[in-house]
Length: 528
Image (cartoon, rainbow, N blue to C red; front, top):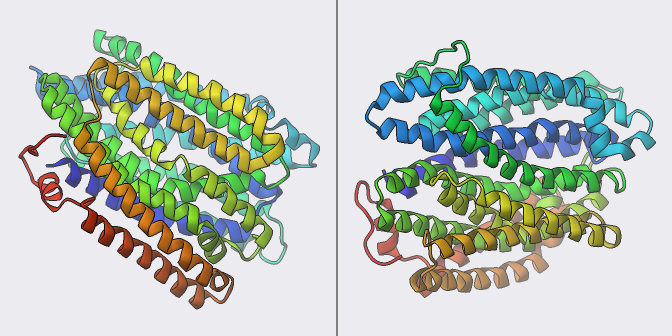
């Protein structure tokens, strides 16, 4: 199946997940607002979610999936791959249990390191510690989910792993509704965050059950044996260690942002996380989908030493990424006040919070193309078992981010922090490409540059139209619900129509090119 079809499968379910995630965030904003309980919950969710990216989406996935794919393609085939998976699971499960137990015991120290300023607000620090312990079991289950998804992804079965986040959001929405009902007329936000934090851990268990069923349905059986360090597991560990440091550096950057955000006025962390959800919408749909689809395919091309197909695959992914993220970034930056006012402002979420959230969103999406492109550049290293280079580029970006935060957070507050995040992501993207190009693993061709230039023309035309429409429609986004929805439909529909129409006229949307990307079991022709 082609890269575009693989990506479409993942992106379609990811879009569904993001829709439910958007509903979740709108409910959360209106039920909790940007206050003490909201900040405590955001910190409590940040901890297991950050370590999830470290263990699940970070080091483990990028090391395990290529090795498992090579096992499948090797002499022993299914038998060797199954034995390798069993050996890894038998050790991985105990590592997760041990780490989770230690983290929950040390939670007061962890929370103090990230949010010592919370102690100045009565009850905020204690609530954060309690909620963090409630949410942390999520890490254990979701890390196992990542392994099960990797088994299926290596067989080009991407749908189950993409469906799992939908279950996550459905469980959290149920948690918000339950907590709000439990709170009743008391007005005590703790009831909401208690129910919501419990729902986080429950969602991990639900996703695990679903992926376990999907793996069994695919004919795979996993066994937990007595842990032993086989040569293959040792090799995996040698690959995972630098990848852990690399992913860890990125997560340290997230912790650095959290640390600075918790030192700002109450509600800053909540507003940052809410704005990042808008930014994550296209990132999750495009970036994660492309990164997930490209890794096993690229590993197979490299295993067979087919450099032409490897270059073509990465070039296709790059073009698809910019085709969708350039207009998404421009549209989010221009229309941020419309989205925030239409959906988030209301209930406990005040109009002044909406203004700040809009500015944060504008700053974050400046780095959106870089966030997505990093997702498709990293597999170029991971597929070659090179997990060290992304460590170095991430470390440089982390240092750059910290230096920027020191200078911009005090004068510009939470908006400055968001801007620093975008700048550091852009630097990381440039460094990764420079190394790939230098090693001859991927190069930016004139034809690819020409297509992206045409995409930029279409994006500029769309931006001009959106800017004009925002001036006319902005008052409508503070009106009744029907007026808000109808105005958003006009705004989004007009922007999309302009982009694709102008893109077609200027050649940003090459019909023959799209047909080649869609074609099954046949390489695209032409230079990339």
